[in-house]
Picture 1 (spheres, rainbow, N blue to C red):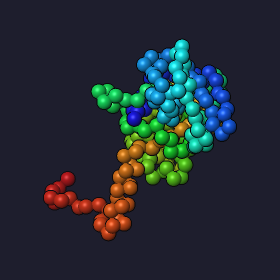
Picture 2 (cartoon, helix red, strand yellow):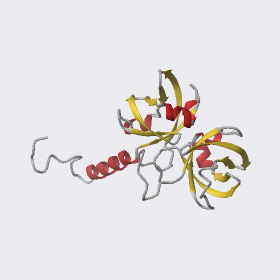
Picture 3 (tube, one colour):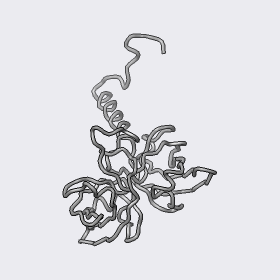
Picture 4 (cartoon, one colour):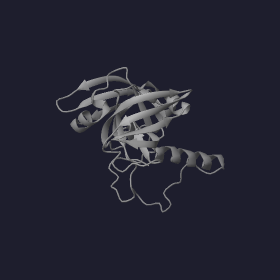
Length: 213
């Protein structure tokens, strides 16, 4: 489990194709300080398992499913990537609950520079639109962001100077792909309400005590 607070802007050192999978070597001196074989590190929002650690770099396997359902397949040596280690139970939850399981890939549609921030519009795959709401949370390339505006096929986010300087979104341009993970809480609520309706119960209950809001 992650929080979407990027710890380090890493770099792809090597991509080795192995049939329909790939081995990624990634430079990240901070996130490898305590990394061991079998540890998890989120790379652009994708939870990967550490295979080896050496001199500030780590290697991880990316299976065909991962390459097909995320933007990791487009990475090449020199590509910048957002890195985050899993949250510890004693840590503050600075962003929101992020699983590192990509739900879909969006595309940067536009950037509107401001004096201190940019407003970025991202395309939204149709099956994910129902989970994205204004002032809600979404993960873009592993970054926990607040949705400024939500539409049927796109959404907007405002990027503060820290996000622009310390993450990949500072230099991504229109046409670039980004990994998207919607708020898992919304998916659980939808599933529970759907199961309840299928069982013949109401989709929602009235106020059980009848009090005024």
